[in-house]
Image (tube, rainbow, N blue to C red; front, side):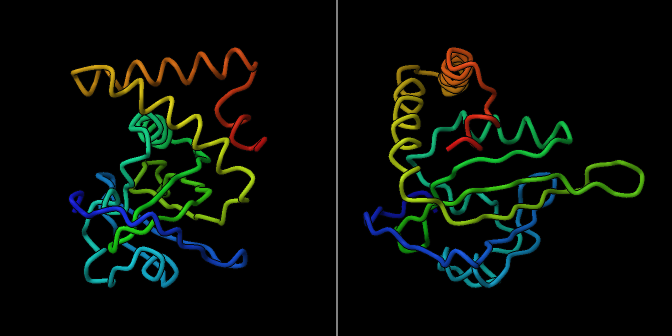
Length: 172
């Protein structure tokens, strides 16, 4: 799935639409709404049971996904800007709100994500940061070391601005 070529074509969805999906604890899709299917270019049968990374765009820094997973696995919500890739190789930006699904006993049973459109003025800001993070990841021969170094770079950048990741994302 990651061998799909990139077309450079941006896709958009309406401001009044939400992309919605749910996953199990391993990130396999258990629910996807029609907007997700339309934007990603997949049929429901192709998405259900597939890893959510089926829409991962190679320009997304791995450290952002690590931060996302670390946050939701700890039982907290997270907001993030994400660049996704469609089945055809097109791309689309989303502003994601990811939350853990918690049962009546307080146990995390899966994850729920709502994605909204991204204001065009935000994209260059996020692209610049993500390019720096990807460059840092690529400087390291071991993937885990690259992710750790880029995560550190992100946290240092935010600390220099005096903001948390959430404050930064919500301020854009």
